[in-house]
Length: 257
Image (tube, rainbow, N blue to C red; front, side, top):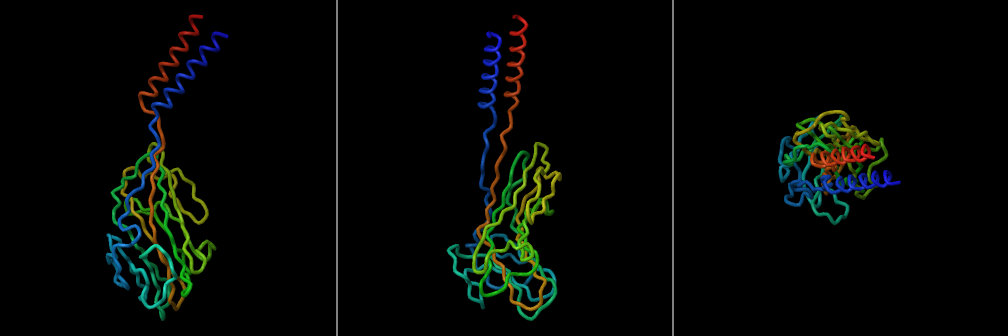
């Protein structure tokens, strides 16, 4: 009985030391410049490599007739009501055909990806009631050193687009291990570079929009960008040393008896 009590005492002390010395989990909100797009109102911009405001860069690909901007009420067409102020919009104008896509890329966030961390991007997407949602695959992306490492796709084909005239929040998340390798498996409509080492790489956000139909206009809108980071608790070296000493003490106590 005394031996059992001694072992229980050692285990309890070890557990207490571990609880006291493990680095606490920290949830941080990473600053995203102009995250609500409230600092500027650009109207139509159809020139590629244009700063829409706060360092967000518009890049256009494909045939002409594609524009973007930041505005509370998109020009020409009436907007659906919302309380979030400005938003960034991408519009495919009328009279053009072929696949056309655009990217609106954040400036550097000043965040170098760390080990044992989970990054979660949340973006609100809007589906206007007076113009069709784009027919291609739209994505919210996390990019490390210029390479897409995780994205959530939103499209008619996936049947996960916002209802007409409404906003909906979409998220994409990835977790790194102690070596900086991505360990997350993708969910529905997601692509994640599982197993890729991203330790120390510069993180950016990309809002990607694509349309494959002819004619127009088609619209998609983005707002309320949020990026959260949670660091996973890991034992500190002192913790492991104390646990090791506890184990040695338990063995010596057992030998004496």
